[in-house]
Image (tube, rainbow, N blue to C red):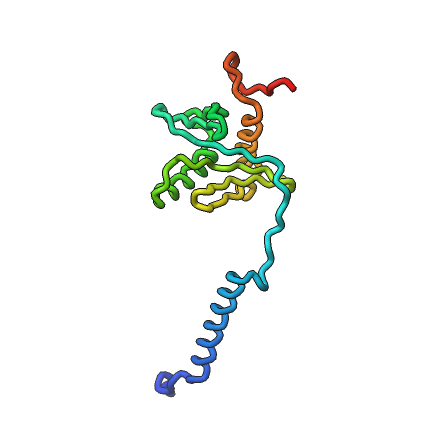
Length: 163
């Protein structure tokens, strides 16, 4: 019976593995810093962008307000719009962890290639909403539609202003 554990592991193999690991880390870091060897994300033109505030009400509703004029864009009643609520809560949680208050607006952007993104300029975080499927992205697309059609105080839903 032979005992393989009596032989030391070849030193050259260990040195080569360490060098390969170090080279990989250096290459990744330099690509990240300089941009050389990376593939940039294609940038599409911005079609429209709206700045919103999301305010929690005591009854559990979330009021979506225009950051430009403070007008109410939509009221998300308790138990509804779960995807919108969870995305905004995640961004708000990151703000609280960094000691940032609710004052900076969130930016919802519709891009020429059809993408929707929600940006938090206060933290630099961006959520690509299409990654969660068309139904979830559609919930935010509805906010864009509502933002260009302020709530009609005489009726239950949004209406477009006459041209």
